[in-house]
Image (cartoon, rainbow, N blue to C red; front, side, top):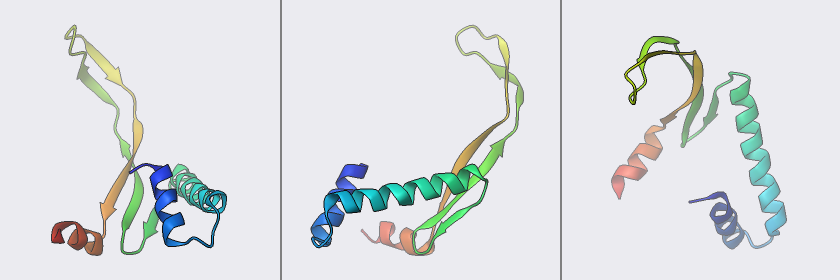
Amino acid sequence: MVKSEIIKQLHIKHPAFNRSQIESIVNIMFDTISDSLAKHKPVELRNFGRFSVKSIKAKYNARNPKTGEIIYVPEKKKVSFKMSKHLKQEINKR
C-alpha cells in the first residue's frame, strides 16, 4: 500500500475530511517521524511498533563482488522496526 492508498482509505472511513486535509495530516505524521529519527529519538506507536535508529560499524574487509577487491565501507545508520505484540497477533491471525 502506498501513501495515496492510505489517504484514499482514510477518506472513505472519514468522509467529513477533505482529501487535502487528510493528506496534510499524513504528511505531518511522516515528517514528524522522520525528524525524530534524524535526531536519533525512537518513535513508538502503541499497538503498532517502534522505530529506532541503529549504527552499522565501518567494515574494512568488505569485498567488491565483481572484482574481488577489498574495499572500505564507512559507518552508516539504518532504521530498525520492531512490531508490537498486538500487530504480531493481527498478522498471524489471518
